[in-house]
Every structure is written in C-alpha cells, then in structure tokens.
Image 1 (cartoon, rainbow, N blue to C red):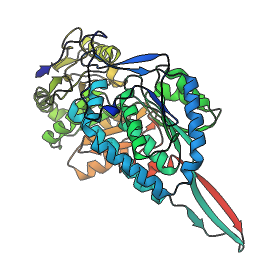
Image 2 (cartoon, rainbow, N blue to C red):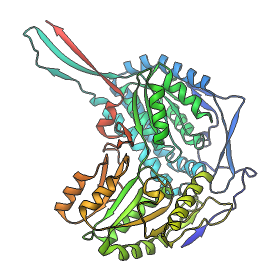
Image 3 (tube, rainbow, N blue to C red):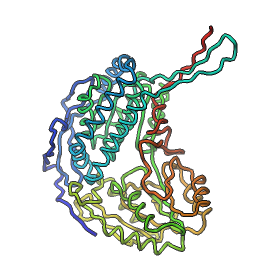
Image 4 (cartoon, rainbow, N blue to C red):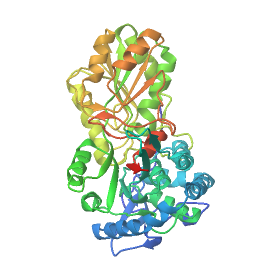
Length: 497
C-alpha cells in the first residue's frame, strides 16, 4: 500500500490557493446580489495538512432572515420570466462551472480533502444538474381533465412553490447545492443556501459564477455561519420559506421536520444510509471487487451511499476477501492535491475517531483485520482502506453508518437470508448486489427495501435518475424529471363556460 501525506500543522500554517480565476476565492457571504461581511469570521482548514485556507464571514440567524426577505422580494420577477429566459441563464451558469472546473476542483480538495481527480468529477457532476434542470424548465407541463359536467372545463397548473432553502453537508460541497438550487431556479423559485461551515468556499464560488451568468440579485443567496442550529431554525420557522431541502443525518433531519411543522413546509430530506453490498456466488468477482472499490472507498468512504455492510456468499467468501485485499493494497493514501492519491483524509478528528471506535469494537468481538487497520500518524487524519473479516451482526457497523474506509465482510448462505439481513435496518437509501443469474436479479432487486438499487455496478448516482431513499433515509427525490416536482405546487382550476 502506498502512503503520501504532509505534516499536519493545526491552525499555525496558511496555504495559498493557486487559482487561475482568483475571483472564485470568496470569503464574504452573498445576499441580495451583494457580498456581505460581519465582525465575526471562521477559519476554513485543509484536513490533509491542518493549514488555514481562508477566514470566511460568520453570519447569524438575523442575516439568514435578510437573505430570506431578499429571496421573497426577488421571487415575483424571477417566476414571471419565461422558462426559456431562466433556461438560458442556467445554461450559462453550467458553462461557467465547466470553464472553471480546475479551479473549483482545487477549492474542493483544499477545503475537504477529496482527491483532485474525484473533485474534478464532482464539478462535472454538479454542473450536470444545472444543465439538466435548465432544459427541464421548458417542460413544466400541466393537464386538462375531461369535465364532470357539460359546462365545466378542468385544468391542473404547475407553479413554483416560492422561496426554497437548503442545508448541505461538507462531503460534496458543490454537487449537494447544485442538485437542489438548479431545479428550484428552473421552476421559478428563489433560493437561500446554508453550506457547511467546514466547506463554504465552494458555495461562494458558485454564487460568484451565478452572478456572472446573470442570476438576478436575491434569486440565489449563500449564508455562511457556524451557528447551524440558529440559522437552521430560521430557515425552518420563517413562513416566507415554503420549501426546505436537507442532506445530512437522520437525527438532524427529524429535528428539522419538527421545526418546520408549524409552517407546514414542503420538505426534501436525504438522510443517513446503511447500504448493503451483496456478492452472490455466480457473480463476476473481478467486477464485484471493482464495483466495491468505488462504492466503499470513493471520497474515503464519506458518502451517504457508501457500501456499509458487505455480504459475500460463503462459497466464495475467502477468495473474494483475498481479491479485495489485494486490490486495496494498490490504493494510495495521501494529500488529495497529489494526482496519484486515491484516498484522502477524513474530514476531522470526530470522523476519524468514529472509524477507530467501530474497528476496535469489531476486533474485540472476534473480527480479523486483513489489511489496513491503523491511522497513519497520531497527528494526521489519514486512515488507510481497511478490509475486515469474521464479522458478526452484533458489531457496531452493522447498525451504524461508518462514513469512513472500513470494509467489513459478512458471510451468508442463502438468497432469502441475505435479503432479510440487508433489510434489517431502519435505513433505506442505496443498495448494491452482484449476480449473473437473471431470475435472482429480479427477485433480489424487488426484495431489497431501498430507494436505489445498483445491480452489477457500484456507481448509481446520475442526473437523469431519481436520487433518494425510504424509511429513515428520507423523503423526496433529487435529479431526474421527478426532482423538478419537488419545487412545484399543483393548482386545480374548475372553469365554468
């Protein structure tokens, strides 16, 4: 296994980002078309080195209220633009993202540690939502319904819901915003974004490019701040906000539901996951290993759709464990700015300690570490990809999302058994399985209680398909033509003639 990393400096060092477009490194919030600062600031730190990248404006709930009011004022004029006018502005925004792809990727890697090749991919992925929904803006179709009486004509209109808001995490600081703001703006809504305090720079760069693309003042606002509870409460309780989209933990999602109840907001919640990854004995093992490397170790295991429980049929268990371990040895752990890095740092000490706690729990209960298993240095956030065997259902990662590069291999016997094991969780976001038996594919696909199922693939998220889960994994869908409906209201009209 290859390791490459830099000394972690805490907050004593400062890193200068070398960007071609220096205007993209914004440190002020963006409200009503203005760059807004306050007396308070918070440091944005590179998790690979501990170096400070920038000091970003730290706003309060009062500033969030100002952003909401600006969005509310701007919404009437924005919704009255033709679909083609909104489409053209969004298409220009899409083009600007791709023109600045390298700089935007460098910002992502600096503020959250993702390998630069993955960061470039995220910018392309994030931009794809803007293009998709720009095109969908011209296809917001209503219906006519045969009348129930000779003098009645019945119609259904689709209209923008109004002011929409988002609360997004640090793991995809560009794409988590674009796949929410793009359908909102396409539908005729205005938007207030609250990015993670760990990764605000990507959101602010989006605002800068949005302004260049011609998004009018007040239509897209970015409120930066460390007081997530207070800003979130304002977004939930303010009656001018009619839609809230959140990506994050189930615990916080449940709290936001409670806080939004009085104003009866429309909610989209993309919450926690506990994805099973099943390998049957008739699977192509090389393809299964390749798919698992993507589904488990992309973004250092810090994605909501990461494979969390890996079930391998008993007849191929040892062979699969050997093949996976060999493949993992070829992954390089280190600073994401290095082009050859596959595994970057975990986001912070809490994320690293969770990985170590789950691993220690498993080992104490009889699990065996096949490869990896220890952080690379005491003062680093690097943890190598780790394969663990002899797993039992009483271990922590059976019931908890890991959000790190641990790959526990469970052994199973029958198809019915593994479907029951896979479904034995409160979560229902993503699932994966590998099999070449067509009959089995249909039965397992239908039997898995998840919003998304990958069959013989470890990469399932795409602009064209609906992303979202069931059970404690959330409400609503993002992406695809279904994603636009999340920002539209239905209006029934009964016309007497």
